[in-house]
Length: 370
Image (cartoon, rainbow, N blue to C red):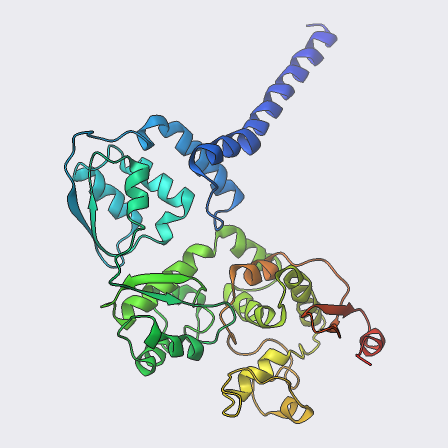
């Protein structure tokens, strides 16, 4: 074969390969997003491509009812039942034509995280998409527990009486001291840090153990393999990453600053410098009767002397446990921090909640408010 023919064939094969890569990285996700909406935020890039490809392969199965003349029936979802099990029963009971198609759509859209236990009226005359979405329509008799980012578990407990759940705050805190088995692999001391911020819609008769399981399972699903790998790259276990993210959550009022704040703390840890994090002192001080708050603000010099393993002004390294329950943004900030030379930061003097960052102590002092 002549040399120019060889190079021509090689170039042709490279073009074909590039075209395939472009198709997988851009065309397939874009096409799927157009047909079925955007993918769930918690999916990694590789999972988005994988499930997008699967949905396109299912074709009309997703939008075509199994039986246009089907009759509405009651379908019960048990507490803690997996989406895989739900999909299999929907197919075996004749509601849908493909359990795999239902499962792939539920995972791609994130519906797998929000399907709740209870009785639902569905019909084979509905498509897989219609049935999946119908399982999101909750009864007025359901309770709704909202967990906000940065709350400590006592604040979650205090919100229970207004959630509609029949769980006493004291029983909740007692049960939360023993983490469910589903998060045992992370070796947490308690559920603190693992109450993933979200809205949990559940039957009012949900028990405290069932509630903790649902919340803990939500956390495990959000901690993807990509996040685990990124934590490891930072030299952190998942538990250590959650501890650091719980501090970042309380420090970074504005989400866009979280990766910078995380970089500061990681830089300090790398050289054995104390974290000097105000939120850890606030956690150590606990509930403030005068302000009826768990987070004392402002802190005074005497506060920084509190004798507690959570006081990072006195002890080097991370506190023994998380101090709050971090959002996915705070967790991602620890996993993917900005690369900086910053070792210091303080609040900007305009009350905006933003921070000014510094490399040296001298710069930090110069940034003090007048």
